[in-house]
Image (tube, rainbow, N blue to C red; front, side):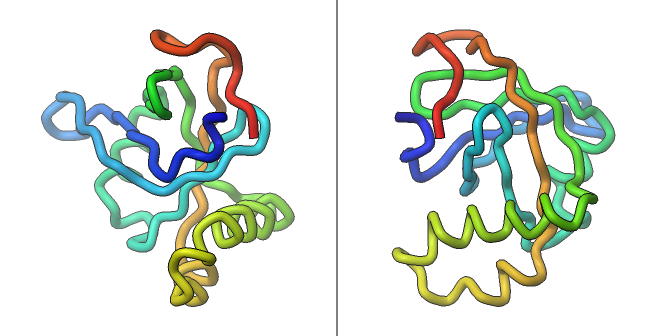
Length: 124
């Protein structure tokens, strides 16, 4: 089950170089929406890159999904994304309260069909 993976790999297009940049990052899934929290808010390179070119790819396990990035602006979705990530990672790291409260939630709408690897839509 993809949602149980500890990390995903986000590949963005560099806003200056135009080259692919991949990072390992925590994530949480809700259906075909994947959430990440940026501790550096909109100053993080991956956030800057994703906002410049929102079409990204995300690898979870052996599956790679095309996705479209957006900053979470709805208050209810914001609270939901923070709680989802906190619940997933707080059992392993009990010092996430500040991160949960101050990080910037970013959502990625995943294509239901992976580019390679395992078939099918991600499951939460």
